[in-house]
Image (cartoon, rainbow, N blue to C red; front, side, top):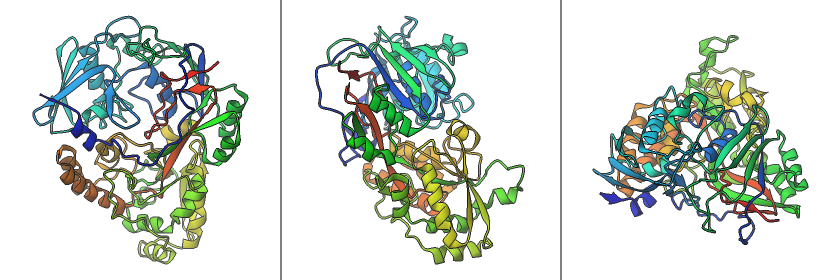
Length: 522
């Protein structure tokens, strides 16, 4: 059997961020105890880690439940519940060895049976509709003994340890299933103290957490972690400045200059793997006020291409993010990624061509298109309004509909014909593309289906030679860019903020947010 090391580093998304990030204050001696609080735009919606939708809930599930691995800020897989792993059969059989000190919050040891139960649940589309296609080509999870799990794959796949550290494959206790959304029992660094829908979520330290901090004692460093919903980003920043909140998860781009000028605030972040697309849904849920043909208008390739040529990408980047990002080329892989197809150039704004394509598609001057967006993610509504203005030059009307973030992802994503969306990065190239563009993928917002692309993504997933694998992913990116089902005008930087008393927070290129290794100075 083979230890996973160098090859995984090459084939996962490791070392892909080559632009320096803004980091927190210099390291000082660790101080334990106290409460750490984070402001988010909307309250935690669910505590079931296999059913989370927006990142508001991640702040709770990431800390209550453990994964086999943790994706580090260099995008490599580090030990969490699994203290080691190896592969055999050309990376089609993986063996994970569990940390024998790991316990659930009720004191019961975490076993291989728990891992099997949890991963089987994640692989069930009915139980985990958004995560079932994001943890590799798993065919079977086998319990070898109490602390050893064997995972069988249908093909060679080297990125499995990274996928198993992502959002959904969190390990739960079978006996807790009925109460998981009100009284969750995980094995993470924090336990639930109080959760109120629409209100504050409070977690407290897990005294028996199995991982140690830099001081040789059990993590986390703080005694309590509070997740506080504050809708307006400006109000979150004001709370940081007043000291009533310690952290804000998402610092909007327009507030960065203000935050940097404050002597009470530290800005954390920089380039990341996220992006904000205009999603042209090919198979939306039919609106009662429109017929199916009107709703499915984006099945016409020429209309999608026209929309892509309407955009002035540099202007949209400046309007939406204050220029804090990189211009995009209608596929999710940014140019600083190791797998980026650098031959795909961003489309230049071309209004005459856009008009021509619209006319050929039978779209009349003055035609209205309804675009749904939300102010709950910085940049989305700004991008929508910018596109609205640019579309006037092409003689079409974009009706922007603002939706509150509390129901945007549940009521409009995957359903409406035309939306703005918001995606953080994924730890592997496969996870960055396949769930979003493979037929039936769990994150395929546009309901796009292309058998040729499916074949390429399947082949690339199991290819172990980096050069051959990159060639396949280059081809996939070109097909995706040409399809224009997700128009991606830019890749966004990501920023958080904290008070100057907070230590140990690091920016993460996947916009993950862990506080178990953070603390506050007195």
